[in-house]
Length: 608
Image (cartoon, rainbow, N blue to C red; front, side, top):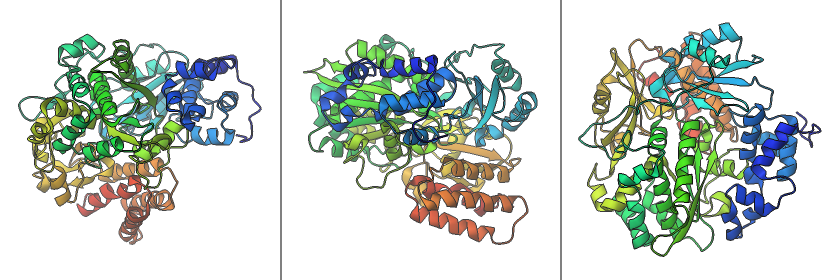
């Protein structure tokens, strides 16, 4: 593609799609801002109020949703409307897995072939599609592609569907078979039903906290949420004020649930005490770690709780604008949260909020486009701002200079859900659950070779064995458990008594990460599983830094030789050297953790 101003003129559908997002070319900038819920930036008066580049990713999504791909004419038109250089816009469009700058079939299915789905028939499904439709991406009317984890591991094998300009994109609600998938691609059926029952959620002890409303409240009803105690926490927070809220979060000793386990109270205090001016709250809902789906379950089934928690965060740190960055493969969760936001705004619970003197806070949804790296908070900032989702160097830290260069609070979905109980019960009461260093409840995602995959809630302190037993136990003889997802580690059957706390995991040389617990039985081909993990990190590396870009590729090559009996005798040493280089010199956590599962599998003798 020519990276100068592209000569192709946009078609009427392309022009109409972009105009629908940005406003017609003759409309005022103020009108376009109002239509996209960005008027708050004008009030802040920062340079971002005059910069439309932050609309680039939404515009690319809008174009592809309408015509099926990022066409030259459509991209040219977006560049003209947003005054973004075509080379820059092309670099952004080609960064994401779900965006295509090549013409595609109108009907597209993305079939997960990641580690949870591989043991549940994903390869057989791919073979059927290839036999019927030809190689991936080559169909004229309908086609398919392989996909990394879609976050529906409890329904493996999983798929994500879209038809350009027609029905909204949807994900599979139950395990997919080739017959139903082919019928959908051939458009013999265009209806994808919503789930007819609540997801599998359970608790290892009496009573649920984070999951207590799942299956009980109606996700699309504000009245139903309020009947079950909704918005009591925001009322308390508005009455007592920001300092009281932050003090309770600090007293709770809540650690972030996204993987890094950073103290939430430290983040909240730092943003609240930043110099006067614009601040932002971001909910990181881009959970893309293979085997992780807890945040999706919360958003689909209890969306108002997330809206309320983000609003409390905004009140506490003095932010007027929040962003919910949600992974692109979660269309139903995006729709459900969107309905909750609209209802909350209509009820005066977003926007200008009339509670105890009143304050302002609003939320905008930003949809990702298939990039694991955007779960890293600074890469997420770049994505929202309209740049490639590449991590930034730290310092400065996000609490000092984050989104649009302003102090920014970033928490993931599960972390924010805990805030409601912290506010209502008090920080000390919250800290009484769990252990001294790991307070409160924790959600675990069970998939793989377990009887009943799903989301399970435990107070910190439960063992790996406890969690697996809650899911009905392992199917077959246990060979190893992957803890923490692809960025985690394998442990053997002799270590299932490990307490799942942050301190217990550290002592065992593990990371709880995003809460993945994925058992594998003795029939598993661990060579295949580890090669898929290596391919995942090679694909998902943003390529910005050499240690990660080159290291993930060389790691995959060495592992392929080792597991295909083509070893030269130097592979083990090479894998260790590569891992050391990536851990020491990579810019972000992707490179730091890309070798953990592979080295642990080798250490356990799973590849011999």
